[in-house]
Length: 333
Ligand code: ATP
Image (cartoon, rainbow, N blue to C red; front, side, top):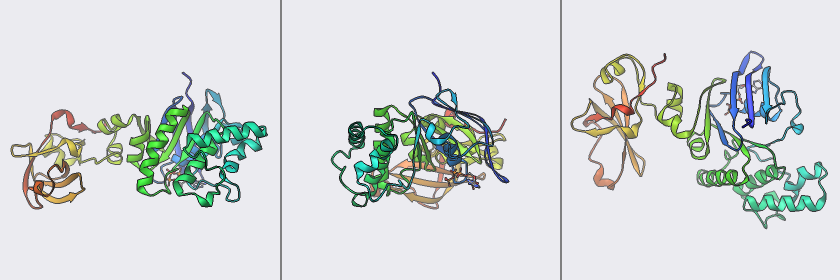
């Protein structure tokens, strides 16, 4: 199958800054693809090059197998949803959603029908006569989505579209957005710096670091088999063991990681340490353990029995163990 989006050897420089560094990336038709990474790692620049708002310094951008590197944004079969929504305040909801179709001179009746269908798909049927000012943040976000979907783009680009929402609404919208994507079958390319958000929604995730992609994989694979210490630390808690800690815990030089929920606190473990901190998180507790041989490991335990389960306290001596298969070897080769 032809990739929905393909970038080959794409570099983007702004003066002395290399925002994107010789990037190869392939986004499959119909997938929910996220670009995840810290601020300044190049995600938005890649999105803008796919949209056509920014031209690569070198390299090629393909949409649906076609070289669009020099094509203007409006000529590309993509739409972008921005974080700030950018709705027209003086137009009602229907007017906002219809706007792009009116510009393209789609006949009035068809325009109306498509806009109404798009509003239904984002669960805003019946809101057409409201002004943006009369909507909640989540509803405004849905209008912005409907306005993009009404054009039936091949690819929808979303730049931190949930960033302005409070946490609870954000969680709800994550699930809705994923459902919507499945329903409409459009390729979604989603930019976020929130690892939990990316893990929840994506078919595959590209982890960006400093203008480069460190790994592209499905959420579970990123978490279980990170390709680098950066990925291990950005997606979850890395519990990185290097130097003396690696030698005393693993018995050899290198760089290793064990996820917090894979470590058990018991009496007859592999290593001993002292509990430095207990972090109560409601359904689980985190125990930060300073190892006798150097290094620190965070251990996660489910909080099954409430306050009576708090048998482990700060300052306690504990012994830790894990299955061999859960030790992740990140030693650079
Ligand atoms: P954020 O999560 O903060 O949006 P990002 O990962 O999307 O970050 P980009 O916005 O792509 O990162 O920026 C990548 C790098 O390119 C940064 O160092 C940024 O300062 C630089 N950059 C981006 N746009 C421009 C521009 N128009 N002029 C100069 N430098 C730019």
